[in-house]
Length: 310
Image (tube, rainbow, N blue to C red):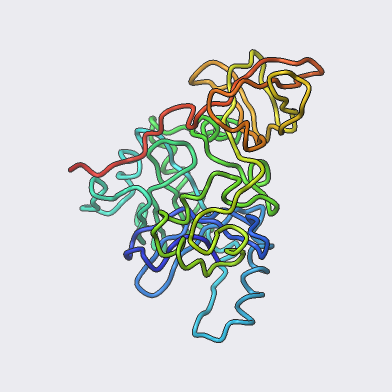
């Protein structure tokens, strides 16, 4: 159902993976954590109903001992992000909880401020250290208020989150990814592991034959996701991308904003594969005017995910 090697995970560890359809398109991106006898999956709220229908379709046809429990609205999720996240969440965790050795993309069940049935995963959507915190719905407000009682913790909205994830070069489903986009086009081939990894060599996931060749190499694609910078004004989604001559359309912006960290416009988009190399000069049609820009590597701002001290 997903492209990642869940079998290869050790209990308590997780990964970012992709739910794909029969054509190799991406139905959703998801964080999956493996436990002793089950996996815990967090999907996007906007796509959850389609995801559940997709999973149930295949469960109905699967002759094996597998069940799915959809938590629906019984659980809520809060994201605590930034260099002070560990210090802030430690105040709610049980005495002796070892955050120092909790690696990026690992998760565990725990109590928070004495509330049972919670779970934390060291991950996030900002390029910073942080945690995604799941709790029973009836306790969400209490935990949020407890976190916000810390002077170092501030609430923030989707605009701030969007600029941070863009600076980190992270995709937003519905903008940068959709069911017509393959992992190779989205430059997310790493979610399938290395070229000699089990998933790359065996496939076995929905749409694998549209994504991988029999030898595990990626199928060739006509377009690729790239970073774009160098323009003087922000280029928003659906902005047309042209080659350096300004005569030939080669793609489209899918996300764009003004970077608060870099103090300049940045964007993500798709261009024809021959134009996807970093340093390629391009033109953008912004408000009916052609402006110069350049394909660039991502992330735009260096990520600061947590690493366990050696």
